Length: 249
Ligand SMILES: Cc1ncc(C[n+]2csc(CCOP(=O)(O)OP(=O)(O)O)c2C)c(N)n1
Ligand code: SF4
Image (tube, rainbow, N blue to C red):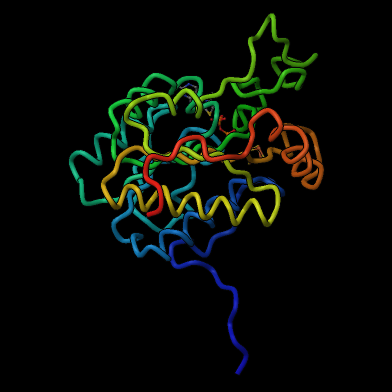
């Protein structure tokens, strides 16, 4: 009898992803589904998807989901968690969503130490709307609104949202990872596991920023875009634990 060594996680629906080939969203969805199953929290999880390419995350994750307007994930998750404190509540947000329109509610949720988990997918552009510059776009990187490349003097530099959130009193755990290699995918899973465990223990605000490729808007092949994350994006956004007040958990 052959031994089954790979299968669809319990909380991932048997549906074909709509994401472009090489996109990081599909990998991250799978990791979330695996972690929810391994921690046995899928039945009490509530996900808050964004406006962005992952707006249809509820088509893939077989858990309770409550959609938020663009950028409002942290505020919606705060309300759900306060009304239903026994549920495990997480948001799933792109960099346009969390680091532009959603900056205010995210900073204040972190500062209040809301016991929620944020999955922050940083692909350096507004993916869903066609590749405009996001706050995270790199200097020199071209986008539809910066066709000659992002210019420091004109556009400012890439924002370090995770580092900003780390200096708030209420944030407990913030780590930046990537999904451009098997090693980094495994580390992303470890970080997501820890973030959810922190919420389960009632310790407060946890966030995992995940550097993710957007081959379509970067106008690269999937392989080139994954290489770009490793060789370029992660030199500006280093992969590391940015804050950890929880220690071993
Ligand atoms: C209030 C509001 N403003 C603007 C939009 C248009 N909009 C939809 S998705 C999006 C950007 C998505 O980019 P990001 O959050 O980086 O996610 P990605 O698609 O790259 O995963 C914008 C501006 C909207 N839906 N609602
Ligand atoms: S546009 Fe970019 S972020 Fe959106 S699905 Fe395609 S590759 Fe992924």
